[in-house]
Image (cartoon, rainbow over all chains, first blue to last red; front, side, top):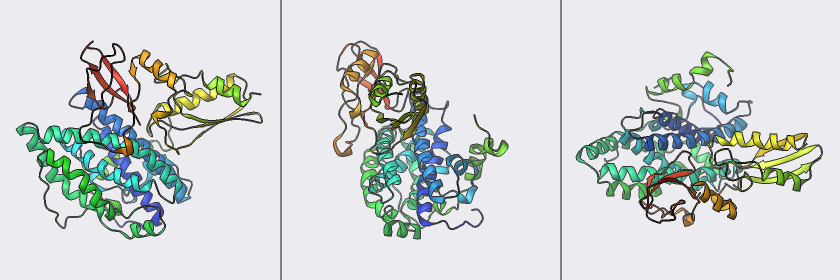
Length: 256
Length: 161
């Protein structure tokens, strides 16, 4: 856990949670570049990373406008400090093996799909436009990950064992997708977006059949709750930022 | 001075950098063109959020119009409505096929995705429907990788979006 976090205006906070979740998952997936188990999956994971970083760029540009301090997408991505990031903790966890990476993509993409569907009706027209566009891409991410979750979960003894281990590790982190925060209340009151707890039934209905076909068992919910979206991150996050932000920190203002 | 119609004609000859067989207007990403005093205003929409070709396309548009005499070319990005493969011109689909890329099929209605749904795609080379998907993502995010079991050739499929 890191030092005290600053309270942000709710609208900005809400957008940053979405933007940062895409950005950090994109950064993690980019680590697979050149390391995929087969070339097709190497390319698939990095193409998904590209979609996510593209979505993050649009949303961070929008966040910069909402913030009104003249910061652009690059400054927000590369010059904010750890507690200023509002991503879900699950996306900053190390990739683990291919199965765990795929399972996380599945859990997160299924959540993004529900979120973007609701956001397409946002009173914030820019956010609605970004969500409507991202939704189309996210559907392919869900499909890609679902196919693999089933193939590996209902695969060999070894692949099943690894996938079940991935479920056991990652499932507790999904509680954060749906925890209630004051930011959600403001987002609902201003019609900016849905309260995230309201997305849980549709998400559960979407992921459960896939996990069942994959013969994977979901652990019971515990009080474990991460708080990345509140700016309180895991011990892995600083290392991720050190790599992601290295160039701008070492050579401030550097461009290609 | 260029007229709006002349500007459209020029853009109709600007190839997509990733798929040079079709132009940026045939791809459906040029949403509006307006000749204004001293220049041209162009509105484009990206195919995919992270498509690295977007910036190259904007530059190509600027260069083509400048070369034709437009002094001030402004290219603006517009996200809504989101780009769809339905906007790819009819005759461009045939050119995609001739180029070795199977053109996009129908989009799933209402975004419904049955589990493990793999669309049937005909081989752009031999026309056989006996094909299989190798990967959901090909050389770019907008394409999937397939293989024809009849002629044994691999090919790409432009995914409906």
